[in-house]
Amino acid sequence: MSRIKKQYTVQLEDDLVERIDRLAKKLGHTRSLMMRTFLIQGLEDSEMIDKTGIFTAVMFSKEIITKVKEAALKGKIYLDKNGEIKMTK
Image 1: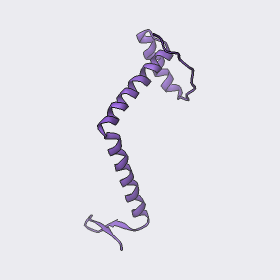
Image 2: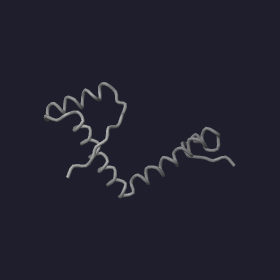
Image 3: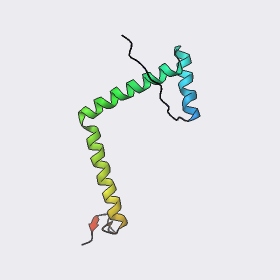
Image 4: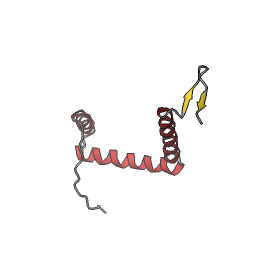
């Protein structure tokens, strides 16, 4: 049973479209089919990664890094002459 498909607009760089076109031609597919296949595969992979909790861990790590950078820029934390992390009070 075929699902109804709708058309969407996406902006891509020319070199990316050229790469997609080369691969589509090599495999005998249309650009549209190739892009749909890439999107489905990428989405399925991302959903699997999300189930493992990796995305949550990455986002948590990103938040920590952002807070450390902000604290460093405000002078709240710094490295001493021995390379140890120090905090101001």
